[in-house]
Image (cartoon, rainbow, N blue to C red; front, top):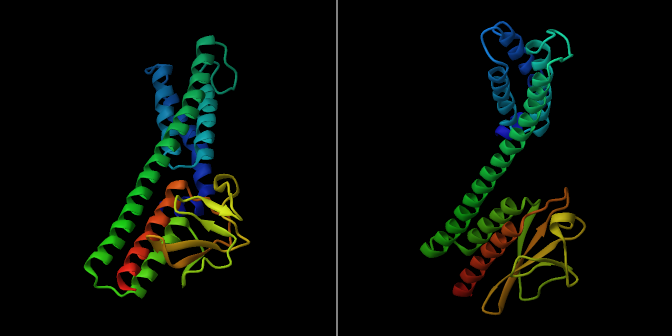
Length: 250
């Protein structure tokens, strides 16, 4: 939800990133006789951190550059110009920009780590939820298959996933093997570079102990998606759980 809100209001976010250091610098200018330039620079860094915390790299960069510019205008002599005469002020201004850019990257890295951790928790919830359905045996095989198909769509960010019964692997030239590697006519596909094929459906075999009960047919046709190796292995694990359930019932 937060990401979608930021995307919808990105122009306002970028405008705020540019103007917030201006307003902060103007306020600090009223206290320039009582605070040091280092203190003022740290206050402006906080503004940059706030912009970077939104997860938008451009907003963080704009805030860092704006902070450096308005620090120069309001807090270094000669005031209200972009000129700087004191070498120490030049050093502080440059450091302010560099620190702002560094903080932006650190904040983005932190958000990526947090998102990765949330995704992993979601994957585990999906796998454990499926295992619980199998263990209690209160859900029909059809419902279990539909549940897993929906989980695979979510994990791999697909357009569609459907189950086809039968031992034949089907006509698909693109498959996901048991180790989570995607192959096209026997050759590995570089998913990180090329993404999942959008021109062909992808086959994920469902079976256990060498017995194939069917396959999930995956479709990613409307856009290029690049699931990680971890996501692909989760999809394989989910399919294996269906294979185990079908082995018990068939």
